Image (cartoon, rainbow, N blue to C red; front, side, top):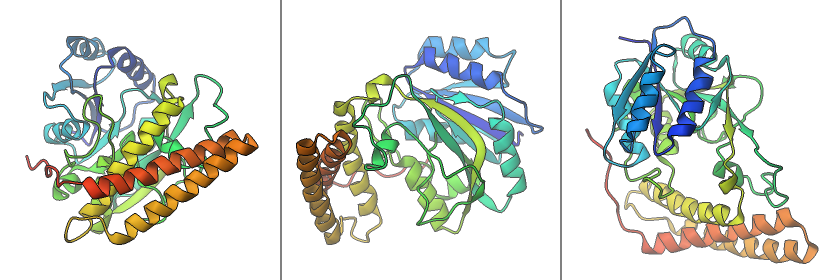
Amino acid sequence: MSDLTVAICTYQRPTILARTLESLAAGQVPDVDWDLLIVDNDGDERVRQIAQSFRDKLPIRYAHEPEVGIARARNCAVRLTDASVILFADDDVLFDPGWLCAMAAAVRDHPQCAIWGGRIKLDWPVERPRWFDVDRCPMLGDSVVHYDLGDRSRAWRPGEDPEFYTCNLALRTDAIRDAGMFDVALGHQGHRRGGGEDSWMVRAITGGGGQAWYVADGLLNHPVPTERLSRKYARTFAWSQGRVGTEMLSREQADRKPPRWMYRRAFEQFCRGCMNWCSGSLRRDHGLAFAGQFNSVYGFSRIWHGLTRRRGPGKDDD
């Protein structure tokens, strides 16, 4: 029985996965009993071969989850570990040399917690576009998976701090099971973009009294794919997040329907977004213009999905 399982769920990115594993193999080794579990959500023989090629460098295991969906892949990892803590990381990150030691130390030093979230720093392949302004539109940071609460570790504050991403997140396995596992109706489904399965899990655990800790030195770098630096991708992300946000809010209601105030706020966000879009365009302020465009798409998406929502499948109860 290991103390810690590092789980990397992957889907159709064997070359990128190999780069990720190289960075992990080059890092410092923690003084704990740990293993690495690769969950292939596609069944690509190349992924199995890559995992086998790292057996001399990493305590690696391979598993195949045939049902597509990131939440299903994460649930597969939870089922296959006997460790008390599972540490999720994405398949396209570059690990800081001290990442695993820092995360393991946080788990050891803060045993009162059920969640430990690390910092995610963006690695830009090209110059950031002028319209990509996370100060004016913080949700753009979500589209490229950025998480940074500063350079000092501290207790995570529910209701104030944003929920952690499973891109860099350790969870007590018992807490995941008690929360009903990751919800398979949320998250990416193959090439269909989604999300929210990690936020929903964080809310479920902390809502039940679980504590969380922000690990500032548990740092990994997340290269930003060039395809995510297009306005089209950002608009698609805004629409998807509107759907996910509406779904998550509905699940918090007794009747499983979006509350009326959501429509009011979404309409206000849509109107403000349109005004900023027009104002920024007239002033040639690219950041303001696209922030307005993004928010108008997000607001309209929430209204649309609230009005057309149907109750989806439930949680994976395996």
